[in-house]
Length: 242
Image (cartoon, rainbow, N blue to C red; front, side, top):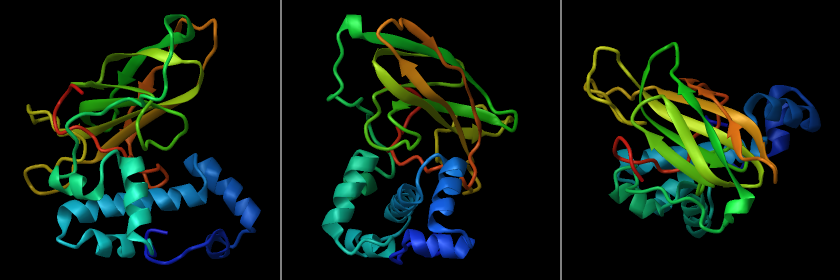
């Protein structure tokens, strides 16, 4: 997938490369990544588009073609719904957003909501800076989160007014070298120009029922790997806040 983003890949193409039947390939892929092959391919296309927008001078039209979209309109619409801002705005903001707004379409009353509360534990492999924690309907962190918060560093968190349903708690942070005092935000580059390694964590499915008041959900960060769906949501250019 990563080597052929501009190609019109099908599930049959992917399964043939893996030497599996289409149905077995889809089951194995979803078990390994948490999402279907089609959704994973769409996500890494948009992730590459994010990278090209902030690191090249290619036009939005050219970028859309480079990541496999025949229509720039379809690309722009998909980008906005997944990242939270348009491709042009994302480029103007340098790859970050000034605020993350929870999905306003999800409304609850006090009697219908609960609180998800827990602790974000740091990765044993490195020190984390600011941590984004979002609540999403599935394992793919894209679009507006149902609820979210940002911590200065790993520690206790709470997501309030969570509606009934089944959700996934997803956390994302940038690794900070132990010797550095300044906190680096997710996806920021360090002083040597190298990209700070991403740390991720998730827990779910987390079910909120009518009788749920507080639902515990601890999250442990770990280095992101090739099987993790990319974080498409534009994150904050800062340490905490919304």
